Image (cartoon, rainbow over all chains, first blue to last red; front, side, top):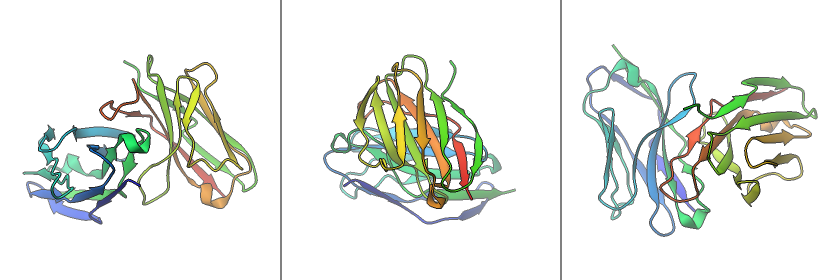
Length: 113
Length: 115
């Protein structure tokens, strides 16, 4: 079945530091890939997505590139802010999984001023 | 545009009691999902509806969990009887359709604590 593995947290950074959260996946066929973010006290929100190989999703300064050869979708941001503190989830949807989202375990990011 | 609504936001019950959660999806969204998120883990799909029909309930513990979406709009998820391991956040999500590219919009969730 489908699965997503993302780096263990928590991750603690200083403001303006570079962020990478690693994500790799196993899926049948060609899945669509997503990063969701959960801010404290709020629901899950879609951060960005990519639907085919070599696509780059981007939003709010975050980027991730769909790498089929390495089955990866790493999240990056060049300069994090305190307001980026949240839990980040990598996820995928494939037709073989009945179009349900399969999530990683989540990575807690804390950004200190 | 109103988002996905869920109630209650929090619920505390004793084991072996029953509990029900309610979800109202975004207007016009045909597909509705219930996910269970245990602390420290990613959400896991329990059941998926397309309009008022079930399309995937393979991970729903059917001996104690049930869900319905009678008119193809709002939905209820019930647990009876609850066990300690059911303590989790129950998330409802909706999407316009069932494809790989349709964004799923999530509600704020219901945090269930079973004592």
